[in-house]
Image (cartoon, rainbow, N blue to C red):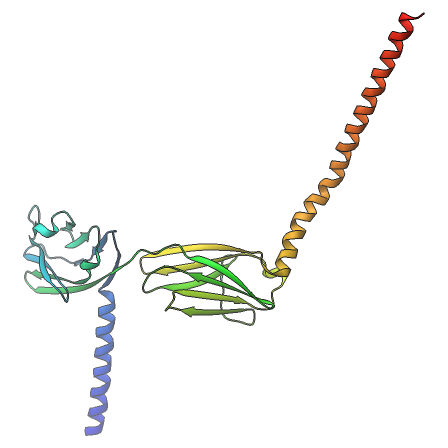
Amino acid sequence: MAEECYKRGIRLFVLSALTALCKADEFLVYGERQSSVIVPGFSDLETSGHLNWQFSSRKTSAAILDYVIGSAEANISPMYKNRVQFFPSNASVLIKVLQYSDEGNYTLTVQGAVTKTRTILLQVLGPLSDPLIFSYERNSSVELRCSTVSGSLLTFSWERGGSTLHNDTKYHLMEDYSTLTFTLTIRNLQKSDCGSYKCRVSNPVSVKESSYDLSSGDVCRQEVYLQWLVPVCALVPCGLFLIGSGIFYFIKKNMRERHEMSEETDHINP
């Protein structure tokens, strides 16, 4: 009996922990530095009462605003006066021109018939830079290395023709977050592998992409050469025709001029 109660207690503890984690995920908000972000309030806000927003981090804490539900406007503290917009319908706030110092906990407390509290964790991320792509030949394989200068919570992916590439017998993908580099290795390079590849770098608030036209390696260089050779060869007959026409024109013009000179000589000396 005691053992069964112990197991049941463990199950309830795990379930409670998972529930708490799920709720915490709902109240995690990401924002990009120098941009704006909305910190959500309550969708079922009461029609009377009082509420306030508070900010806290490991370094500081501050009052953001106070609001009497139903009144004309909120009382916003001086340090947030020009950076916060309040929405009375659901008590959410818009924070403008985000800085890393804005990262922390935002707590909304509503005091009405029932007191409700919600804490939202805001994480401020730096803007992404456009990824750079470099290629390296290794025997019959080619490596495409996609790198970005900075970022956190990054996700990399490689695409070709609108499809995301995955590890298989043809492609090998490797991530190195210490250097923010994502490498795509194309094994046993063939003509069908030549063309455009796209590297996509993203975090929860931004996406950046760069494309690379694979034309390195003997196989792809031969393919590019053939792409240029075909239209050139198609133009050769046209070029020969123009050259021949030009030569014929000048020969005919020269013969006409000689004929005219001969007629003038005959007219002078009858």
